[in-house]
Length: 151
Image 1: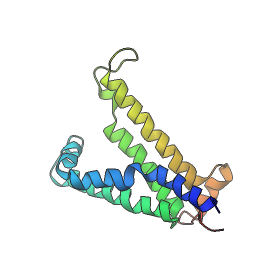
Image 2: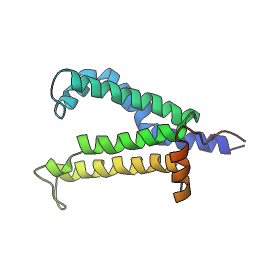
Image 3: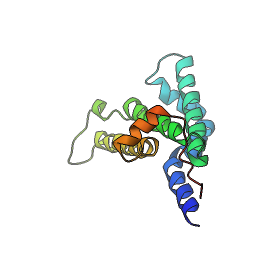
């Protein structure tokens, strides 16, 4: 009886950062999001394309994880998205003040980088499963579902 509720709440916790919050932020603060993207992606069109692609990933892949529709593929895409965004936006190695002791913006960015990777790990666990055999399963049927709400 509680299994479907636990499955939904677990999946909700995993995607909550993206859907609705980050996706909504991209809508409400689109100009700022494009300005941030423009720091790493020059030009007029590419930053807007990146923000639109990020919005679509955050909404559609999160919905897939929540509903169980192609949830393994959606989790894989979200995991990859977390790794890419960590590398693009959490560049602690570019911070001039990275140090382990004392105030350091670089260390703060480092923790954000690691958090992105940790969330990616959660998504990859959902995509691939807990064993090496389940990775092979994913590769043979990436659009399969875990059917998380089936009795």
